[in-house]
Image 1 (cartoon, one colour):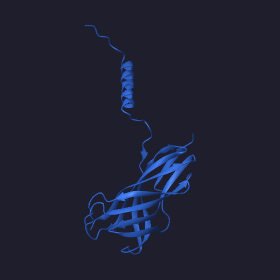
Image 2 (image 1 turned 90 degrees about the horizontal axis):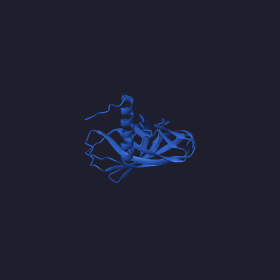
Image 3 (image 1 turned 90 degrees about the vertical axis):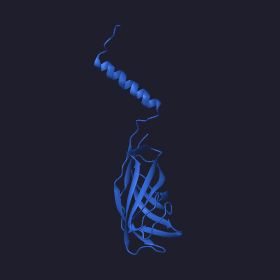
Image 4 (image 1 turned 30 degrees about the vertical axis):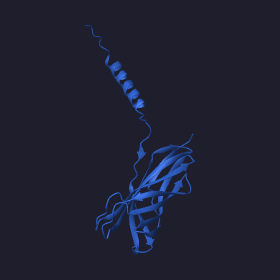
Length: 180
């Protein structure tokens, strides 16, 4: 039996090409990963039945793509953690809400993230957390587009509490809009 020894560089090249074919066949793209935004603290004043008095702090995380093509859409995910603790056990799916995201940088206007909920029961005495908020923003101008939290609405047990920004909200995420 005769064996042919390939030069090491050729073997690596063949292996690399085979891996690229496997990834392409599996539908794995080599696109830019999503930008992982830091959680920002935002101050709110809330009104409505049972609303806490004074200024409340919410920790808000917005995840946005690192980049999109000019004229493309940035799909955003938003999660919110409050400093308020649940006075009673809150069953899973009992809290919902909306949060406005103000666009800045090369983008203008706002979008509303919806679909927030508490996936699990929130035990009495623990912070209220809602996750799963989603929004999409069409980005038409090249450059850096920013996303900052805006007004929020929370619904729990049939009661609606409206919360307005107290002061200025920091930028929670940035997406580079790449010119065509």
